[in-house]
Length: 399
Image (tube, rainbow, N blue to C red; front, side, top):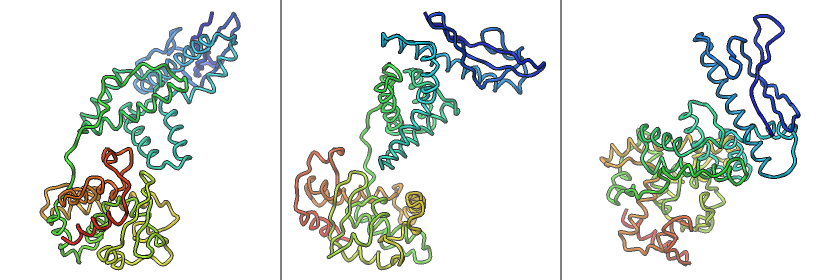
């Protein structure tokens, strides 16, 4: 038999706070685990913390009470797991496992561990999506951590409602849910919790969305804007056009293009998202943008997106992306384009323009560098690069 309970040890000094400790009894062997939680004698009723009516202490006592409940649940969970192994264990084993597992069994710490591991593996983009999800869930929880095993269907439904009340669309709420589900499944695999299927009632699919694309006519309107007196808008416009010219190259790939990637009239780069290697025939319109802005002599990069090489480069890319997208919204207004213009619109617009030219889906897929994780990859075939280059040249002739 095993028992676990919280107890209070009063201070030997009058009017001083005592401490909470946990008593673990297993096979008549008693062990104590002292905590850092301190309360006054009148705040303990023999079993739990009680409020004394002092508003200044209320939040502290409430939080401390929640932490004690959490610790006790963790200790009892550890006892159950040790029992299920059907092997002999001691009270000391329970205490040792608790000390080792306290952080791992908390959702926030468990996710932080996954994020750190993703960064070690070089999966920076994935780690950022996990971090964004963690921030969102922490906001929902008002910063209060929770044991992984307490995640249930009701909590996920409440979190989904919280996201919808903030104005997020179904695809956005599904994004967070899918990441949390991946974290939860990993916790199940590691034996941190048993699978209670907490995501069975929330939406984790992907709705079809209206493609954010603009016509070639709109691209021309943007291209013909006189932005000479507004250099920040002009730069944003030119980055948008460069993306379109290069078959919808993503901004992060543009940011990390190196001078050495351009050789013998061919731009060669590997997509950061999929790792696919792409070859683009260098066109005059691309060269005009590169020549217009020049390149920093000490920089290895082709475009002036990262202006301080070697210094928090990803943060520079993210800052520049925000600035460019902000300017693109102003450009959309100037060009009378009823679309929320972003860099991503350039990618969809190239695909839309290619489709309007009756270019085969397989060629479009190859040109955009889609891989098996994209639905368009179903149509992907092994193509000669020249076929894709001819398709791009055909589009650019109409500008």
